[in-house]
Length: 320
Image 1: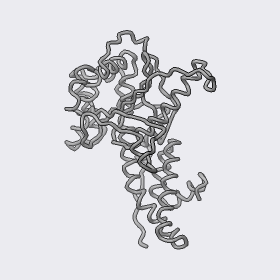
Image 2: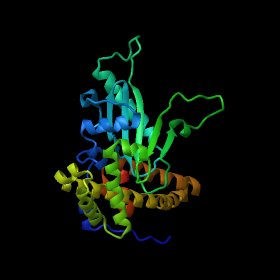
Image 3: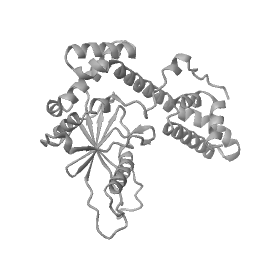
Image 4: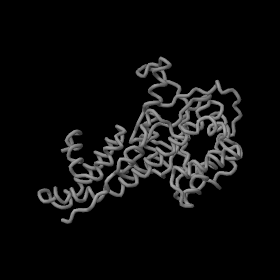
């Protein structure tokens, strides 16, 4: 079999590898880090009129990572537990991620309030509300609903799933959800800033110049002025890290199936072609998922480009 040429990552690539999310926030979370801004966003979405930021209790899972995606923002206000996520890709597994996040949030809630999980009295729980803010490049309506039950393999028509997770996906690209943008200035400014960066990229700028010019333009127009004036370098680094991570994952997705097929062909000599291909793809997918959960982005790149590195990592994770 003819060997394919693999892309080699330069020192410059390694210097710009994605920043560990345990230490660096994404811009969306950073933009809404102040309780008053988060409260304003909540009011805009729900038509409420809360005024006191102290009524909002932040419950964000600081160290929670699932498939490389951190819990962006979660908080309780009144009797509602809110989970807010930001996505630049339309992922069908968002309801499943929500289920896992909420399970952890409720576990923490029960523990912090001293409730007895095994007691006879029912524990009153805050109402779960899950929203994803989408600003990717794929076309999407203003609002989409996703359900966990749509992923279940239903054994028969009479079966009723014991679990459900519902997510509202709000498109926050320019030109979408105009009424919501009018009610929340912070969200509108965020959408304008990201839209300006995308426009610069379409005009042929590299990512660093695209972000820098967008910051200059938006700061002059008073858009996210408080962030751009005092945290310009930090904002730039966040966006460069997000862009690098997005490009890395796009490359990995393209490589994953082909690498899995090649490994499957080797395994298939003994196991049978179809079984071998499925096993090869499954093993690679498991390896990449574990590396992503451990934030080992450089090793992901190496695994995608080198059979020797994959063998090393398979052995390390017990996937040989």
